[in-house]
Length: 178
Image (cartoon, helix red, strand yellow):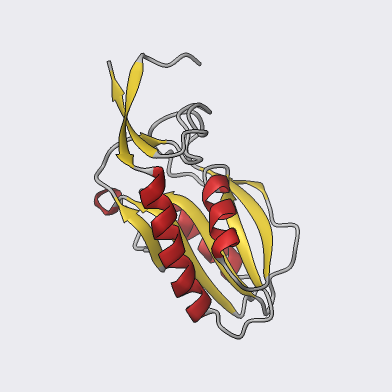
């Protein structure tokens, strides 16, 4: 699939992201103080950079697992139909779980994943999203922690893609079509 020409305007710098992750890690450690091991569940693919940086800041025992859910395909709009493409490998029954999402837009994906994981009996289940677009919300869900609230812009970078491009940018950028 070819994309129309576009440029990327930086919205959130790599330094701002790193500083915010340090602050979030302190709050997460406080919330899960005393846990024997926190299961950090990354929602692929967009969260992989965020989860890597976040777990390095968590000075506590962690286990990392991944779940891949999709509601976008290669487009810019949510299809509102969430499909699980890759399930967890490990068990979360009676475990403390932190779900890591790249961006909460309509809320369909995070809501679906949270409801699915709750059926598996975690001791505690909390959520964190790097980005939140509250003006786009169609489902009543909010992450426990949010890195940055952003306006309704199409963004890329720091793991977030447009048709599998631009995930490797170290910052969050707004896509502007030329």
